[in-house]
Length: 199
Ligand SMILES: O=C(O)CCC(=O)C(=O)O
Ligand SMILES: [Fe+2]
Image 1 (cartoon, helix red, strand yellow):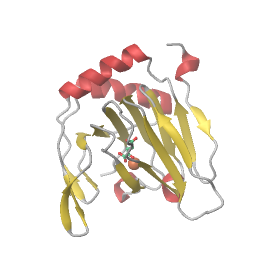
Image 2 (cartoon, protein in one colour):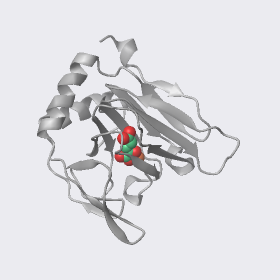
Image 3 (tube, protein in one colour):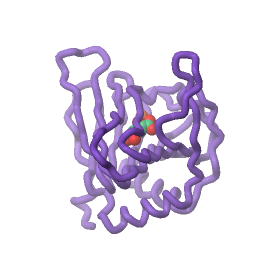
């Protein structure tokens, strides 16, 4: 893959700093990463409290890194980095010129798996976190909506096999994002969000 194909391009959005590369990895490299991650990651079915009731999360998750971190009210104990995750981290660090000490992985098994509207604004991530998000497998829609400005349109991006999305600067202050369910038949999708957790 040549450098232009891998380049992160700015996504013009007010009150945000977002970059996207649709072909950060080529399809062949992406197929290999998808299989390795499906097989090697210690996928967990976690629960979340919704309206006072424990519910299974609508996706499988895993957390690797150097430090513990609270996510969706859950204390996550990180597992030590796998070689494949180290390799991905290095490439994402180079492209984004940022450093990450943890990665949260999500496995969306079917179109019925999803992630609700949220911002990645936990205190441990610091004031203006840089979040680098890699996608492998089935394509899913990702949407961003401004928290307060009704005059600003929501943004929808297809996160395809081998793509990299970078959110940083004030993005988490002003915008929410989610992965909606889809009734279309889709292949399983793996997402990795690299973060820097301050201890
Ligand atoms: O699956 C995605 O692309 C979104 C993941 C996400 O927003 C998160 O893990 O915080
Ligand atoms: Fe997120």
